[in-house]
Length: 160
Image (cartoon, rainbow, N blue to C red; front, side, top):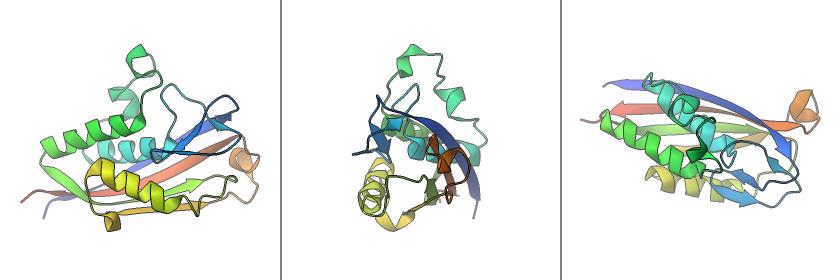
């Protein structure tokens, strides 16, 4: 069986004038994340992991922040476009595993909705999507609540 693994990582700084969007859902919080698109770092990291699994570059290569077309773009649409590329190359998702690193807000109660949204975007079963959250124990830029980070790993399988 032809399988590939990809890793994605993204960070964004917080901004008081933006909504907080993670995994395709809006979460009530006094700050959002700053970025050219909707700054959904969770979907960005998953997108990069899928691109990496097929050696297709990164999210900035496909959706550059210098292109006004992607200003304020819905990251769910970007992820869906990349997953189409995965399918075009003859692969489908085995699973995705991601960890969001931020001090606040606590994400425990949002994770079920985030998993459902990502499973919906990728048209996969819920048990193929694992999302976890942690803090950085008040250390570094995440600990000072200057921003947030996400790491994601995907496994894709060649269609038989």
